[in-house]
Image 1 (cartoon, rainbow, N blue to C red):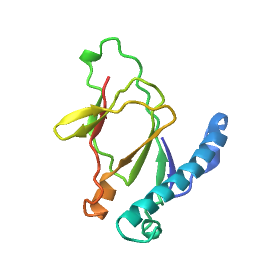
Image 2: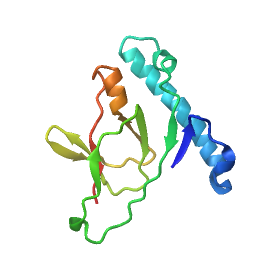
Image 3: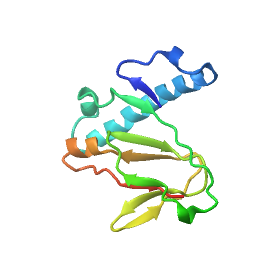
Image 4: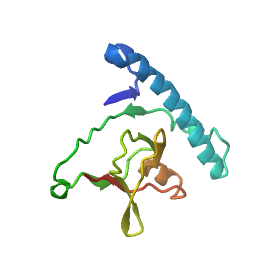
Length: 143
């Protein structure tokens, strides 16, 4: 896990083999977050910079998960269901296994991987500050 902010991450703490790519990721994901939160702010009837002014773009981290092939998936539970605590979560699913599921009504829906697509989850914090206009979603990874 890399915690980019706050305070700002010293780039020397990033392994040199992937430093250039991660610094670029940090820039691009910041631009994406600003764009998405601007659109969501306008969707609530505010100006595009409302969430930015409220410092919702201040904290950023990167986490990587690896779910190896399981020869007996019926004996595993995967990653327990949860909603993310923050504002937005950006997911890049790198395989075509269809392990990510979201809660819908009383059941679970498998998200079919789409090459190159990003999945954006609304977190609990964004649900709270928007008075549930935007709702966080329970999700899980199932083997």
